[in-house]
Image (cartoon, rainbow over all chains, first blue to last red; front, side, top):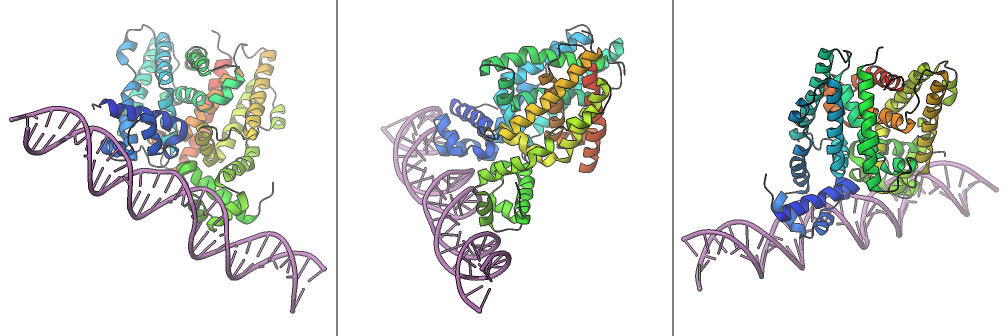
Length: 205
Length: 205
DNA sequence: AGCAAAGTTAAACAAACGTTTAATTTAAAC
DNA sequence: GTTTAAATTAAACGTTTGTTTAACTTTGCT
């Protein structure tokens, strides 16, 4: 997938507007204006508004694949959890706008169901987590019987909750601006998720 | 707030359609048809589509207040966590449609920011969790230094993740239908969240 | 230079949107 | 039974929606 400058302008404008107004809330005229292009260019390059969303997803999905090579370098399973969560949160946090789009649109009716790219992404990431847990069990550090799906849901959900309730949480946490909020996510929230997963995997009962 | 039969029909229809198509995606004509009323009735009773959403929120919010009395009956802090999570998940799960509406709309621009009812609800629920954690620390069962906001985010986020990714997770978990998914949430997921919170609050490091 | 393809534009398209109007029916009060 | 207000309706309102058209400009190739 190769895009020229103008197409990327449109994709970036769409990302901004979808994230703040949702797919239905952002009109093609809004997007065209944000991207400084004529309205017709969107249909010319992408075919339709729906296909723009689809193309947008395919364009961004690769950014969210967990890099397995990086993880295999780390020694024990406990450290692997730390690295995994750190990379995962950093990746999602650096594409915060995108992640809000995903969260919103993936819930609505059948949109995105066609987008196999995302299903494959989720399955890939699930497999990475599963292998880490299994290696921890093999080492004797982790207890068995914890479903990777639930752990993945916990990690994703906790992060997403911070994305969805930024206004409320930023206020509650006494954080001044958006940058501070991003920093909080990359430090305190990351450590919290790391701690939670390790606590859970080593829990006796 | 008292509503007649027809108004409730509209509110219920709105709940269904907002949940599946989003606020922008559900037209007033859709809602009117779903509720078997004339289109004009929506504006007649609620003023506008925006006010319908606002009224809808205020109508449903009370259902999500944690009942503190029920919790004070339980003895130790560990059991309180179990009861809290159980009631919380059951409450959210029985209003699944609504919760999807909240999740979607609360993220988009400034909508809902005016709805103080929700902020108060969140603060109330946060206070309940805080008091449970503190009582556990007083008992010597829980370790100190865990922010209630993070624990609440984890609980909410994990549950919400199951709401947002039902199609994918239902497939991955091999669950046949919607009822089975609801049961999974009320049993396995509930136990997982309970275990996670207790593991975290008793974790050494 | 000449030509074909790609890029770009303003204008127009029909459809759908939320809302309002004006007319009519129903219900309640005296 | 008459009167007044509330409820209900079909139709129309003016916008906005996503998309297409047709004319025009730019680009790349021989």
